[in-house]
Image (tube, rainbow, N blue to C red; front, side, top):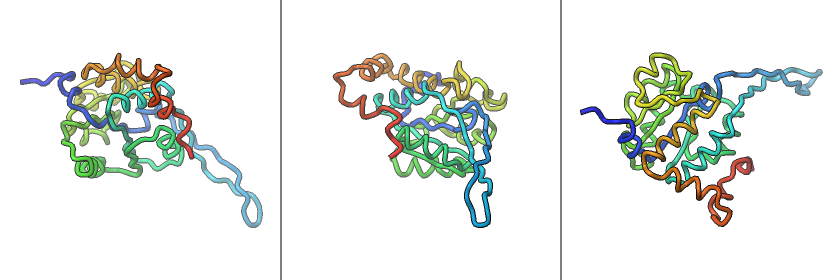
Length: 202
């Protein structure tokens, strides 16, 4: 019997995202930055990425809905580390060429099953996890091979609200979306201000 995307989403406790092409539009900006050194000034490479504020708010909604969130990415970037701190992500794995390794660590550490994990990806490196996890999501700009194996494809592209789409789909399936939105915007709710992004860099 085929399991619907909604049924899969209802079981989710943890949602994990790829970064490039999912939380960003896939662009990687390499910027030379002058650095003082003995004998003169040298250039150091600085990597910059653009993140979407809708996705950041989506992480807060996910947390209000009882979900834990994280990232698993092949690249290593201080920009990503800063954004992860900004969002207070529970799981941050960089430099991961084989993404099932951190997935297995998370399963063991959190005492969850693969059926309770959602993974959002866009490229073939994400396929091993998407084939194993309970709810596999492809962003709108994902490669065709990835879309073919996804349980759900977001209406928006990576870097343009795709992560938010995935979060809202899960919360809607759980019957929680309207509730957490109201909690998030309720000034009497002491939890929401503590989740505001932009305060997590210290």
